[in-house]
Amino acid sequence: MVVLQWRFQWRGLFGNIKAYIIWKFAQALLTFHVLTYNTHMSQSYAIDCLLEPVFWFVDNFAGYLGRVFVFCVSILTSAVVFIAYWVGLPYWWEKSQSVTIALVIFGNWILLNIIFHYYMGVKTSPGYAPHGSLISEAASICKKCISPKPPRTHHCSVCDRCILGMDHHCPWLNNCVGFYNARYFYLYMVYMVMGVTFLIVAGIDLGYQVLWVNDTGGLMSENDPDLIGHPVRMNQSGVLVPVQVIAEYDSVNFPRNHILPTPVITEAQRITANSLKRKAVMFMAMICLSVLFALGALVVMHGKNISRGETSIEAHINDRLRRTHKNKFINPYNFGRKKNWKLFLGLTQGRKLWRHVLLPSSHAPTGTGLTWHTIHNSLEDWP
Ligand SMILES: [Zn+2]
Ligand SMILES: [Zn+2]
Image (cartoon, rainbow, N blue to C red; front, side, top):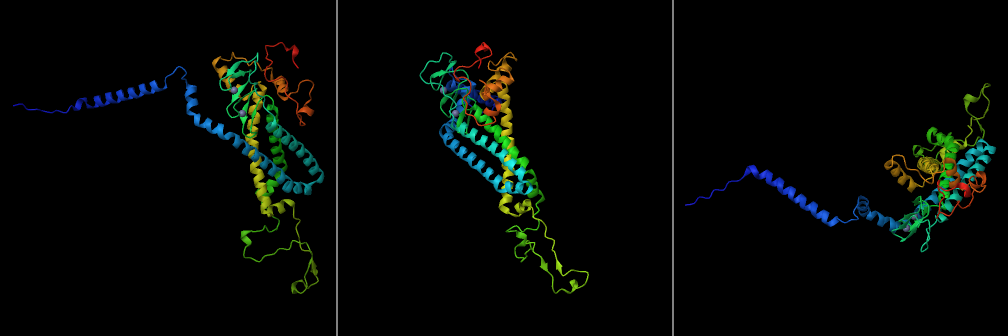
């Protein structure tokens, strides 16, 4: 007779489970490698694949979003200008008429520059690399356009074209910022920051009086919840009220007619009492401060790039090159701070700051955007 005895191997159990998991993991890893391995596989390719849905969204909707953004910028700017005239002008007019005239002239100079540079930034083509022609200076071939790519040119996935001297694609302009419109883009931001700074400086006392002191000078604000149900009326007319039959006044020491103390109502108090104007002041404070911080930071950031003779794209590339080449990297388009700024603003060929930067000017930038002077060129043919 044979007796079968089953014995459970407790000792080897955990070792077996561990070996099984390692084996399954190795299988999964091998499958992943088999599916993803090819000679073009790299980190940036993997990131490109993962970001594909984002690119798809940008490609399909950025055009529409851009138009909505341009509309929003126009509406907000118009609202701010309207409130400045509707609320700010009477306030300053009461203080000093000559100062008001000076403020209106100065403010409109800024406004003119804002409108001009924004319009030109939206409407001016950034400059496109020519299709189907040979460019002797072409640095490479664009994989998406399958055409020569001049130096400093980059492909914009939103515009789906190669952009000369590309800086970035700007949804607020619904346009790429490149060789031909970079100056409009930057000066728009500078004048916008100047504009909101001007409004903040001119309106800081008004904002303080209306939003902080909150004194209506006895004027009743309409829809004041405290006064609902109480039939209170205040004499704001300044008209003398004759006192006739009250016994206390009928003595030699008291005159029969009183001049009631009617306080002078200032414009700030009138604005405080008007709920719509109060809201407008609040709106101005929020808009101006947020634009100041957001655009102020961008002006500083782009200003640094311009000083170094770089576009925003080159700033990223060059930073990486500086790190890998341990500061041996030299940007060939960096002619020194002063010359970089003159080139950027187009202040060459005898152009003047007061005429071509402080006033609207549609002068084209120096050069073609296809070929570029570098620090290695002889500087004799420099404009
Ligand atoms: Zn391209
Ligand atoms: Zn673009």
